[in-house]
Image (tube, rainbow, N blue to C red; front, side, top):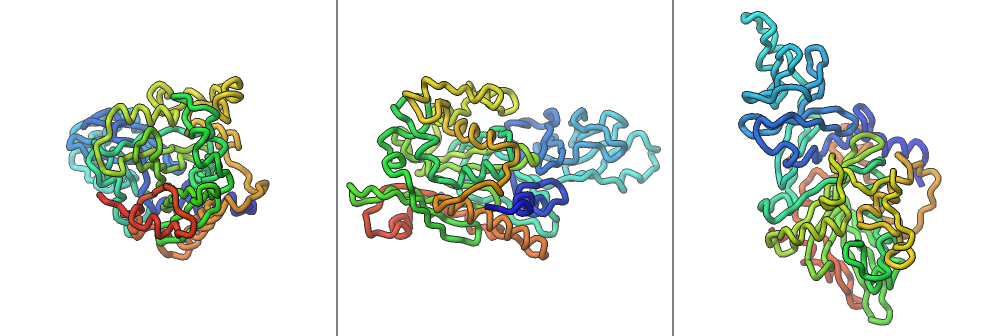
Length: 423
């Protein structure tokens, strides 16, 4: 349980807040490359950490991310003209490059040097793995850009999607690092194609009270969910990685024999909404087929047929996530289709920003507790003028894994090689 002050501290991420200033010290996804695919495409609205921004891809194909309102008199740059290597405000013609420099001021006399004194707030961007990343912190403390294994793969070997979620980022992140809920929330009573979740005979359903072990690292922590199977003399073990400040790496194998590595980012839009970025790649580094991706996205409940414009789910709080009580009795535990839709149904209906003074935590919440402590510690480090945990880059070569482990064999030994990156 958190105190009220701790809950406010860890969930409020706007400009000037302690957690907001801490999160700005990390590179984070700003938007997908597909949202501004071509040079001189129309500008795109972006909101991150409570800040309104505009993204645009210039004539040379580089992406800029600038404050949403023109430095002149506050007109919205969303209506601007993206042309000739800059974004031009339609109110008075002021034009900015991707660094935020004012490069043209046509309503001022030609001899004026005023444009050289004006700078639109802007954040540096990097484009990797179909994602446009930004860093919103102090320029002199900027860490190296993302370099996890999945960001190093060729474009045909990694897939990234995103989904809007209507609640505070911490509710999504807590759901991600909570491994015990899969025995219930994602349980299938029968195997029905398209329902998502895990078959009735899955180890997660035969052993519903996992023991959690957490190993702190300099990027976050490695944690294992250990589910004893006494009749087999083994345990089913899933090994995850939590990467500061809001990335989870998990093993996605076991669906139709696929061996996939997957993960999520839970990125605050503001204090009451978030973007969930979802990435997938094959354990062997092989190209991802269209059939595989469609199947995986549909199983998660975020395939093209599940989405409204703006990456929003058709199954949402307004329609009770298309809850089917007949399905709940006979097909799956929730009556809701899609693994991630099931997650969002629970996380969003906790409220926009959950009051954690009311909760009662158990041993299965060990990873949740550890993650919160690390975020709170990161705030203290930034407030003390130090770099927060997780900027070292030592998460670049880690993976997740799962499998059966013989009794008496430490999981750290059993998975020692499998949790190392190959590509």
